Structures are given as C-alpha cells and as structure tokens.
Image (cartoon, rainbow, N blue to C red; front, side):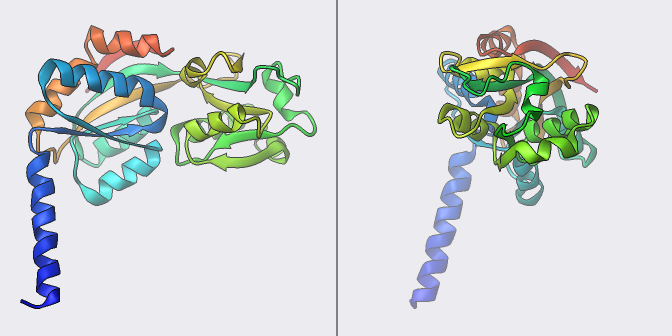
Length: 253
C-alpha cells in the first residue's frame, strides 16, 4: 500500500469516526457574547439528559456563513434575530424562537479617567472608542445606532479598532486599551466589579432579540428538539435572567 492510499484511508477513518461520534450529541453554533449562559445551560442539560452538547462560539454573522457552507450541525443561536430570520428565509431552519432581549450599553473602566458619563461623551475629542466588527451582532447594531442618531461619520475619528466579537470589545476595556466600548448589557454584568456601565437612552438605542433555531439538516433532530425545549423552559429563562438578559420567549411562525 503506497503512502497516498494510507493517507486517504486514515482520513476516511477519521471522518467516519467524527460522524459516528456526533450521533446522539447536539452541535450548537452560538454567538460568542452568549458564552456564559450557554455554557451553564449546556452543562445543566447534559446532567439531566446524558446528551452531550458541543458548542462553537463566534460572531453571529461568521457562524451564519459557516452554516451556509458546511450545512452541518443541529442548533443555531444568534445575538440578533436578523441572522436566524435569514437562515429561515433560505429554508435552513425548521423552527425558530425568540428567547431573550439584548440591550446595547456603553462600558468604561471602573475608574473612568476619561470622564465618559453619557452617550454623547463618546463623541468628545480624543476619546478612544472600541466597537465590534459588523460580522458580530453587536457590531451590526452599533452601526444601526450610529445611523439612527446621525453620528456615523462624526464618531469615526474616535474609533480606534473594530474587534471581531463583543467579548474582545469587553477585553479592550478590561485591559484599559480604550476609553469606552459598546457591548450588550449582559456583558457588563460578567465583569461589573471592573467596569462602569453607561446606559444608552431608550430613544437613541436599538434593542435586539436573541433567537434560536433548529437546523434543517440536523442529524440529531430528537436531541436538538430536547435542547430547544430545555432552553425555552423556565430553567433556561432563569439562567438568561441570572446573567443580565431581559427574559422573553416566543415561537416565531
């Protein structure tokens, strides 16, 4: 047997092993900003059902594109219902739910040496602002907030970088590499002892729905259905509430 044939056989064995081991498990694509509640929900679900949960965290848009390309996996959860709705329109989801509300806020280091105390302060001269890339749900809504308040061009002079995910925006502020960042309210609660939160006035803000959907090409539809039932139950809602999310639960037709 030549070297090339050996490599092909080994590759096939690995692929088959991965596919077989995936049956009976649940593979979830999840927005990176939902890491804390999703990890706890997954652990509790595993303990109660003996079904293994595997989660891939990344920006909602990155995950959506990955799903379109790979056409694998069981569940998709996005920080903005727009992404879930897009996959539903393209006939890649069999059902979808809104499970919580996401509220954008401004975070600054606890000591707030730059004296940023309200939304308009991020426009002041020499303020260093970090936002997420538009591939992340928070980055997309941040741009929508700028457009709504007609500050898209004005704010550019203060934006020092576009981070890949909301978690990286938060890390910039924790490391004091920027004066202010725009994240979800729940991200602030994860590190409230080290951060200060500045609310964006309701009339200037844009609240988003966190949505989840079951993928049409799921190899484990029964297990995926059980996970959907769990995350939309009171147990799931309580965990989201614990991490600073506004509770909400509605099946979308």
